[in-house]
Length: 321
Length: 306
Image (cartoon, rainbow over all chains, first blue to last red; front, side):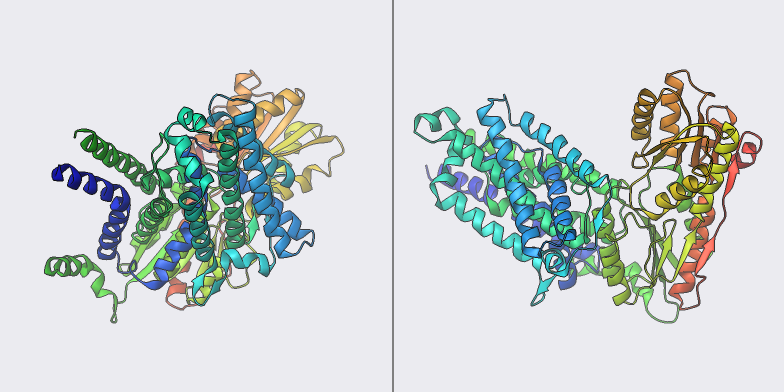
């Protein structure tokens, strides 16, 4: 009995801290491989470069916990970038530009959730795939394909600024992480999301308002895409319509590397943050070693498969009791 | 612990000779992508220039695709952090890359702009071609080939980027003066072959009487060429590309493409690194190195296959 307890504890610890351990090992290895890696400047650099993916991954996590998927986050980010940039160019104050990006993101996310639940589309893949194309198309239509550059300093602060040496995007990510962590672990709607992902029928029978919670999940995913848009447009000093192309896959990768299960019901904010950092650290470290972007893609692909494989091994070990 | 220290010492070994009188120069060339012959040849030219100087260590890096501007910015940030001796950059965007170029300047790294110029007064120089002139030459060829009459369209790369804007502007400047030319418009295809093909298919559907197309790079021209061939219109639509990679030149020889504007990517890469080395050593750099452009047609195409 005590053996079962210990192996269960070990399995739980591996799930919780496995990604963190992997990140630590990776940092140690890269410190040895590149003299430039382990410096405060570079670590801040990694955080800055990972911020957008981390934000998208937070929303993606909420959706994946419900056993769903959101393919539209990259395109929603692109459209929000463009909308905010256009508003700012038209003379809107920075706060309004930010509110517009967040609002549009949440709104488009809510549309995803409504399409999925109210139209009874067979899988979230469908509405979010549709939204992925619609949002990207609209971003291109609105701008005619041109980037909208030179944004006001107040808006750029959230992507390019810093407070007491801490980059503003890092503060945004930490803030969102705290809110999402509390929401998922300390509130009824948050715990309902895990219940839906674990067993939707059971959740429904227990009186969980499944449709409402799912709409909430996709709205939150859209919201983080809007926040990602504020950070990215600020960082790049531009709202460009192709922003975030392919970002949905990076966000899914971060969530999966971070230990969440594609079958729903499992996943933590800390794990997802670590997943995004693992990807950021990998890309940064490989950049510092002058490894081509093509090889970086190969490495990240291998890491995704390895991360899930570790999870499969762990589950099999746990089920073997 | 001691194992780690040993490992660190071994790994740090090759980099240790960097201080002292025989200081290694670390030059980094960051292009928009490496997914076409143009960038590969530019890279080859750069490497050739670096081989001539034993003190120079060159790295050529690029994002996966030309549209991944944020990836290029991340690559540049990481190089700035390493405090490399000089950067040569073919910027994938304009306003998007300016912040990181400013960071390079703040870190005391000289930045040379390659291929695509951008309005940044602090660049130490620009190496490339006069793209507007190239666009004008393409326009004059099309006017002549059409006898000054017919519907004309352009397939262009990413919007807002100087090379693309200049080629288009030069082309338009010429064809807009001819009263018999009917301007259909310029459609973006992100400098990618597959997009070039589908944009051309759409153009042919909407304008069955289209007479000429200028694609502002080879990849899009080759895509457009396949779309034209699929409708058995080869030879009946004047098609002009830009870059003159081997595949495009062969297509010109085979009569599948009418003409292509030549760039000399090896020369651009070589001159860029020569100038970047000068900049890294604190020597004066030429403000604008124009490596020249030429019109390639069936008559002179064989010269460009050597």
